[in-house]
Image 1 (cartoon, rainbow, N blue to C red):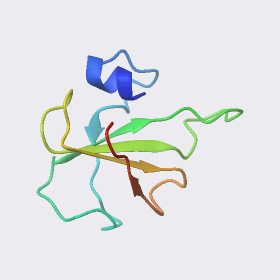
Image 2: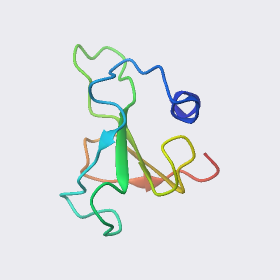
Image 3: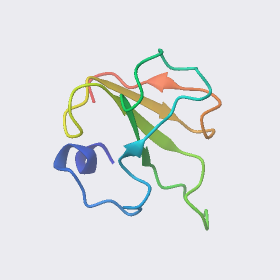
Image 4: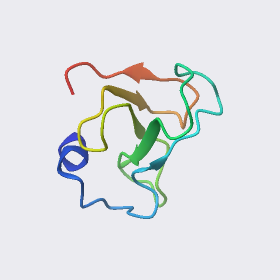
Length: 83
């Protein structure tokens, strides 16, 4: 997924990937609306988009400053270093 983000797509879920992530849970640092974007990470065996996401922040869509991963649909995040 990181390679697809850096390439600007294509994405498996183009209606959902690259859209603004609102950080309503307030688990990521507070930033202005539009700072974060979300992308689906495939969940093996899931019939839906599943719960895994990469959230990027700052910079540009193809070269974000920050990368985060959640495996539990925004209940927790870990920062991805050197993405």
